[in-house]
Amino acid sequence: MGWNCLFQCLIIQLILFFSFFMKPQGTQLAIELSQCSKKLLNDTSALKRVLREGIKKCGLTLVKITAHKFSPVGVTV
Image 1 (cartoon, rainbow, N blue to C red):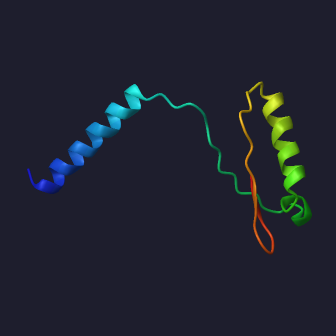
Image 2: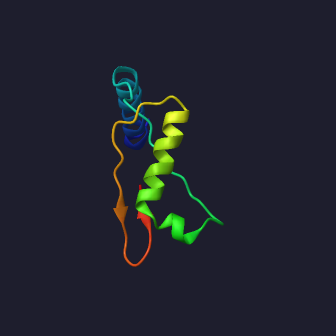
C-alpha cells in the first residue's frame, strides 16, 4: 500500500469520525435561478422577503439572513 493510498484512507477515517461526532447545525442551499425578473433578482429586500415567507411556510426556524449586493448587478442572499 503506497503513501497516497494510506493518506486517502486517513482522510476518509477523519471525515467519518467528524461526521459521526459533529452533527450539522443547519442547512445551506445553493439555488441557481433562470428566466426570472432581473429586477427581482437584483432586489435584496424582495429576495429576503421571499425567503422568509418560504421558511415560515415550511415550518423552519430562521436564524439569520445575510445578503451581499454586487456591482453593477447581482445579489447573494
